[in-house]
Image 1: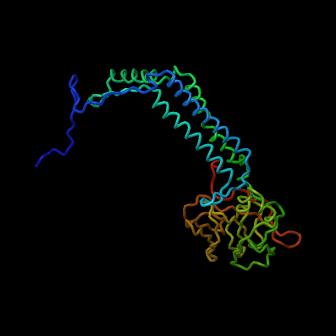
Image 2: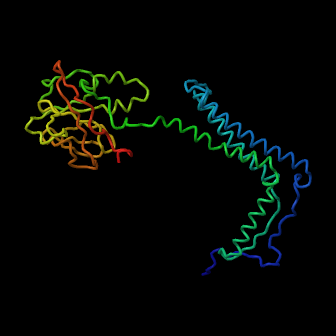
Image 3: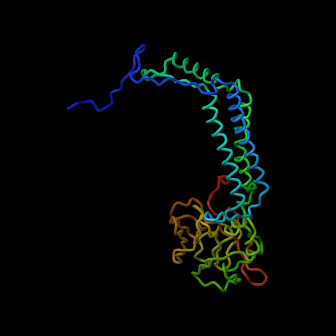
Length: 343
């Protein structure tokens, strides 16, 4: 059996003729005609300049074309005018830089065939010096230093290229400030049944009951732009147990945050923000159906099982002057999962 697996490679020793000689080299028109070279130079510069204009057009379109305009493109469908123009302008900028680079390489850079003899793998100092010399030669032969108009337009196009990425930072929105630490709950906010909006009195809840609830003023912020997070963070659950079954609360010493055994907790899991409404009334355990984090609502909402690391925040509640359940204040700690600023 032969050990030859087809990996033998023919090499050419210095001074020997190659096995497959290169065809005759033909000079390009730009190599022999200075006018053709200048014409190609102007073509490359025009492409780079148009690329820069396309980037500037992108910025103008971003700030001037409303996102409410749409255009019908037939079989493609109805698309946003803003998205269409942004894509065309930025795509054109990329295309022109690519075409300019190709034209530069094909018409202006040095054109010669080079035979690179094979050598052992390695990078001795002399090779490193040779590589540097080759790089310097390539720079000189490319005309990057000599052809100022090409160099300047390329630098201008590449300098403007990141501008759209900077413009997109505007869509990140304003800094959150302390909005992650607060909800729309406030002193006197009445508690109503989620969806129906029914106001609740203590006698409306039986022992062992769980009710999904929200603040009475929730509809006032429901349709406002950017308030979906505020609406979600305001979701709570009400549970009722016998007062003697309550082991502890999150209230400071000397304060009470329940009403006749009725406790209010955030509905948002502190693990990854899942809404929770599964309640085991005998164990007073609130179970997250997504990742099985379990919280003991009779003991300050502490974690008793699962991946969550923080307890469920408790909302201080009271009975207002009309006999309805209401909040004493906002939550005293952020609701939902942890975030960077919280640590």
